[in-house]
Length: 222
Ligand SMILES: Nc1ncnc2c1ncn2[C@@H]1O[C@H](COP(=O)(O)OP(=O)(O)O)[C@@H](O)[C@H]1O
Ligand SMILES: [Mg+2]
Image 1: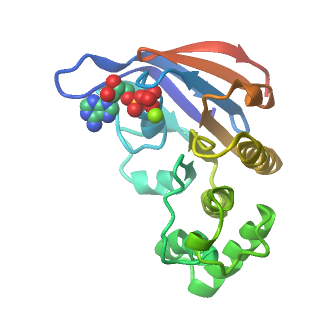
Image 2: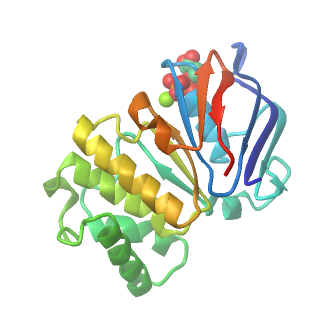
């Protein structure tokens, strides 16, 4: 198992449980999709899956490590890539620099990082935009840069929080297909939060979030 939640609960201050006694497991290479109304706890759940916040009770295991107890959390986080609704790119950098920057911050040399960035930009179909300014490419192209950035550091797990939320349906289709194709090819696991059910059949498992509880809709063998 790559990621495992056991009886996990999370709350803010004196509010009630935002995540309520949640159990979840994700295998290597498994692609899971999560739906649910706004405010049901999806992003909070992804935050914990990304080891960015930690539950008050219960246990999260990632790559066989109990993450609350594990000291070198930043090392585990390197195996996790994030894709956001708004792509969160640096506006004054080129596409290539945006993909390369997190790699350089991880200690990879600038020239190596640029090489990796170029390869990934080609894989997401941006070979003609490698040196383009982020402000001069479309929303769909920006999201492709976001994909390249998430995949470039060779993650085990991709967390995508409404990755098509700001895109029209046709562009969203393309983004979802590229993302799933790359994940499948590289045996990368993914948890994707989305409101559009039309992509559900491309995933191995489907879940529904409701008031901090995660309900399983379908789970196929991986
Ligand atoms: N920093 C915070 N402090 C207090 N409550 C929060 C905070 N962030 C989110 N919440 C609350 O947690 C609940 C779940 O939010 P969220 O996980 O963002 O839901 P979703 O992603 O499903 O829309 C909401 O009721 C939201 O208001
Ligand atoms: Mg959310």
